[in-house]
View 1 (spheres, protein in one colour):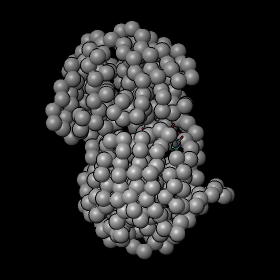
View 2: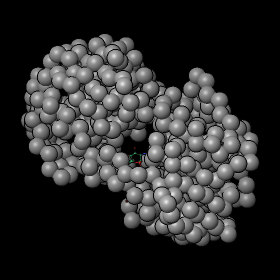
View 3: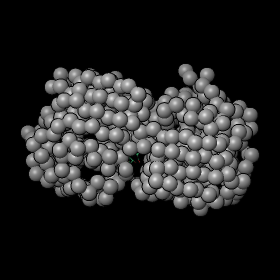
View 4: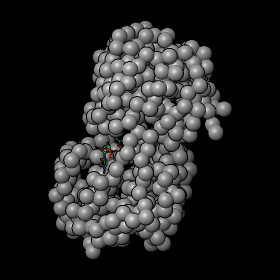
Length: 416
Ligand code: UD1
């Protein structure tokens, strides 16, 4: 099993580019099930989760071809409406095939995604929402079995703005009879990218990016071509990588307007951040102060950058309070940071991080999930000596060639 060996102490310097957004690509790739023919996507990151999505689409009978970040998907009449456990267990986001299968084929059998390291992650909002569009579903033998006589538009109010449930519902509603209104919808940039692709296929989705989304059902859709938006979490991770080493790094090919909450917290902490149209840079900084962060749905501070920001706060002057409100168990990285000598007091949803430059000492640590792995790599960049991050396969689910990008910036990091 691959490990990442990071030798701390190098100041990062230079320019780096982000790739396409994994979390935008996944729902968009599943939305191809809504229209037969060839769909073409550019800026698709080369990641394990993309491979898992291709495997699932191929199991339905689609053909896929991936080369140099361009993915072609040929959708033909499907040979099955079942998403098998063996494929779903590799990636929770597989549940996103439910909406398109029901919209197009009125039936689906999808393995229930299990819990994961960061929380129980139920799918009740997904099932309630499609139920309100006129779909019957039950969970038997670990599978969601869903059927409809034809989906009908409805007004759906989410208890909380779930990203995945909003996406599944949008994909179910585009071919429904009548208009669907989603209230308290998720507002993440990935929702807007999905709406853009659905509209390119001929759907009538308006309001994506705001809390009320309106979807007027259409009779059919046709395949289209699309460029996936840049990955805001990767951009944020690379910016923090520069910052934590006190270096100067420019992140190109990103959307600074998608990471405003991070930029604002970094400025509050004392970093000089410059923003261009499609780039953002951090300048050398000797000392930065502790700031408090609370994760919340977009446009607030993203839970997917909480672990990386905590690594940055271990090097700040003073104590910061980091509060996680999205997932119930997203502090798995804390015990590992403590192994690196960080001074952190974890409570259920809150951590107090007492920062001090130079406090981290290299040690073997274990990655528990995707963003926790990134946090440990970042911590390794400033820890004295060597940090060996085990179970690095989590990182490969969401970051394309992170070690190459960091090496180019001057980090001492290698995969073993
Ligand atoms: C997506 C992202 C993930 C990110 C998260 C929050 C993808 C592939 N993943 O995950 O990286 O961390 O948004 O920004 O895009 N919930 C329920 N019932 C449901 C659905 C969700 O209780 O049916 C809860 C979840 O347990 C969680 C919260 O709602 O506590 C938010 O989850 P959600 O926004 O749905 O996250 P995902 O779509 O799974």
